[in-house]
Length: 58
Image (cartoon, rainbow, N blue to C red; front, top):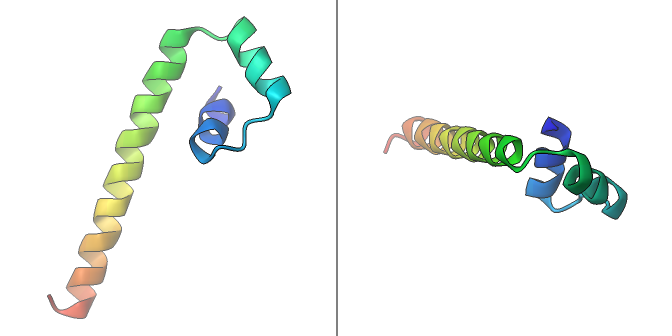
């Protein structure tokens, strides 16, 4: 399930896997994982920006 969410986020999900997910996966699981992935992604980007600004002396 996590692999499907990561693949979809990067836009590299194959048609076969997408069909499998739609037939067997529950939408709520994909929504929850998608929201969690997005939150973690935003926090990581925020942390990297803060680190770079700190190292640059800004």
